[in-house]
Image (cartoon, rainbow, N blue to C red; front, top):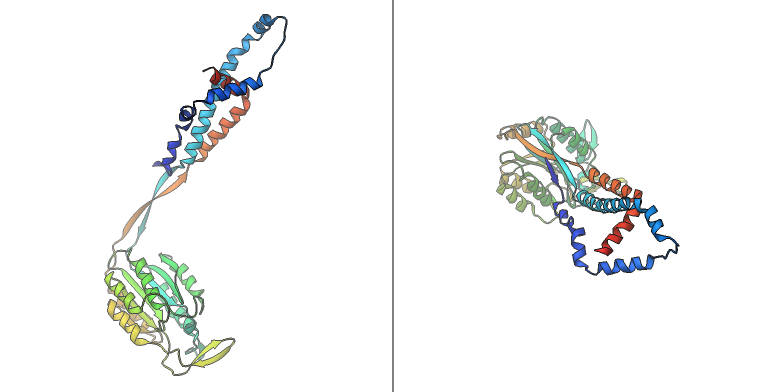
Length: 346
């Protein structure tokens, strides 16, 4: 399939033929130019001299016509290159039946709290999230998985993709406070809903991992949850954080104890209930299996095929033609003089 990317540039094609009518006094300017270039040749026998060089006239006429043709060819080739001709090759992408899973991970400073332990070793909340959700992503064969990171703001780390290995690698690179110290939970949900609403109904699933304390952003968690329910998006919430009164956290090179890092489970449960999802605790060893079971009960979307046209630029061909026309103009410099004289005689 052939097309021009900028077809409106073709309006410039008749410009060389229109310009003489826009400036009718051009003939007088050409005559003045020729008048300044005239030189008088004194010779005792001009008739014999004219007959001796009369054989060159046809070549001069041909050179003048060729010069004019090359000018038109140069202009047409440049305009065609400007129109960006391209050949469109169809490419069909077939996706297998599955779910569209958008995972939103809290990357705020509170995720650095050291209120979990693995094999007797104290670890922060982010380490628990990476371990649990990393295994979860690896087991989602056939699903399209995306990744959102939120802190003071919400960001898309990965769009929905079948490349689960790449999403897992992006998750492993997340560190606490990378998205700012605050927690924009509502913005993360709203961002995920805006991406999932482009997918077929029935497969829109969002998994939110947070400590439940929303203190930044433009959307309140409840408002974002109502938006998710309106679009048919189910939200499964994974809460991280213990119920200890004093929670240790690594700050400024040392471990400190704070009492403002507790988890707001009521908010997280309300988000899950409003959207028809579920709420789980990350410390529960059966949480991962339970999430997988709940998602497996949903109806999978049918296999879909998308056809996209990949453009192959063809501007090199008219541009090469323009370069050849310039080369031809350089090989016949006398044609310009003949062409200018012809304009003056019209």
